[in-house]
Amino acid sequence: MTEATKTLSVEARKLSPAERIDLVDDILASLDEPDPNIDRLWAREAEERLAAYRRGEIKAIALEEVLAKYRAK
Image 1 (cartoon, rainbow, N blue to C red):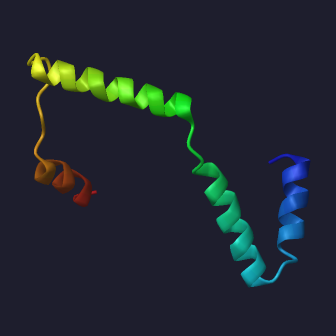
Image 2 (image 1 turned 180 degrees about the horizontal axis):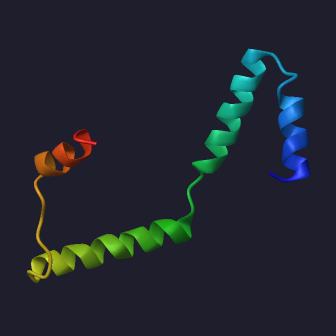
């Protein structure tokens, strides 16, 4: 953590709980801003995966199988 980050953290802790929640919400919202370049890359990746599936190079996995895998962890 940089000194600037530490300073911000110390200052943020001086805020009321409601103000800290607002601050956290604002920071998290800033991370969700769309990035057209990333969206374009993901679209290309999805198209390539679908094409590979249609060519028979990869197979689909049933949703229940995927969910079971992560529920077991």
